Image 1 (tube, rainbow, N blue to C red):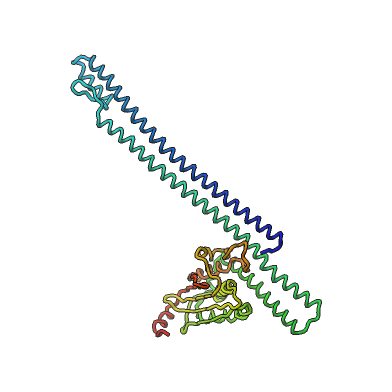
Image 2: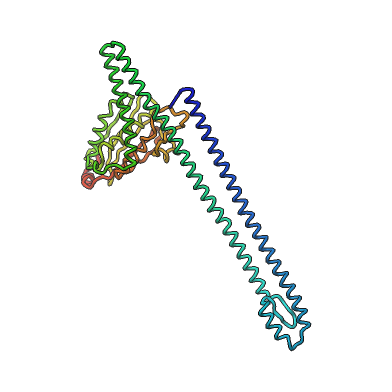
Length: 390
């Protein structure tokens, strides 16, 4: 990252803006949630009061109707009362006449009351359901916005890290070349400079390869390059090309091959990138001068396993789900000192998946263990079954 005063101020400004904007998003979300809860609560209370008023009004109205019909009944001659009863049944089904008295039918009143209470229960169900749906929708939107914001933050950190990662070896190469051009140096010093230049060129090639591999993954791995190989040989050859550079950084590599062949289908070049990233990750997050790394190959039917184990700072439980995301780097972006682009483990997972395998990480008491699993071909399974345990 840019360690100049302007760079640090810019990073702090971006971080502060991110924290403030995220805080305002959550404040707005909380206000909307409170408003929805209050609105739904008021809706249910209002409906309950309205329905109770409707029931009370209906009871009062029917009683008043019964009183008026009672007066009409008293003023009607006995010969006309059968006609009046027929009209009552037609126009006022809630009323009935018994022993020359007009009553409100209890069953009609009970039925009406139950119908209105059923509406209230319906509102009482629909209100919380509406609230849950709205809150769930808001949560999805908030989660999507937070994920997008986090992804953009990682992209910004990636651009800053990429600029730094490329600038450092280029600046070193420029300084070494200018020194060789301007001064006559002893051959031993020249050899030291050339070795240093070679290491910086390898570093640039590694960075470029990771970026190109990420771009190729967007279009999918070329299946034409995948063929059957012995995982023992692929790992041995890949490790032999990287061992010197890793050991120059303090790594102590312990390679444990499987006694039998491990035929799997893979792209050797792409799988070399997988191993390179796992080893780079193990060395980078091992702060001690001596950085022991164990590379183990196993057969665990129906899979072949590659384990890369270190004794570094390890993995926090809360980071495991994010480790394989693009542009994610372990630790705090404001205080992180390790170099990297945040693409290594993303490439490991993506390439392994395209080869039909998987990758997982396990936090140890000290350090971590990454395990790559690839489908083991049938002939290896039969050979493993015939082999007695070592």
